[in-house]
Length: 83
Image (cartoon, rainbow, N blue to C red; front, top):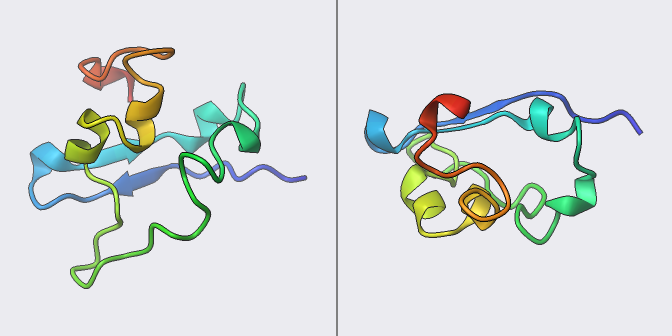
């Protein structure tokens, strides 16, 4: 299977809530099943009417999406320069 190597930028309502997801670095050591569909349902995040995708940093800080692992089994959420 050809693994999806693109990275994602999720624009929030303001720059402080933007989220960046480096999918390519995750696929170097995780399998698809590590995150899909439990943490990231395929194609269900979609875009809202404003053109934004369905993930913002507030959700991540609340333990959703990336926050399921980061801060527990992966580097902390306050290591902004890592993403």
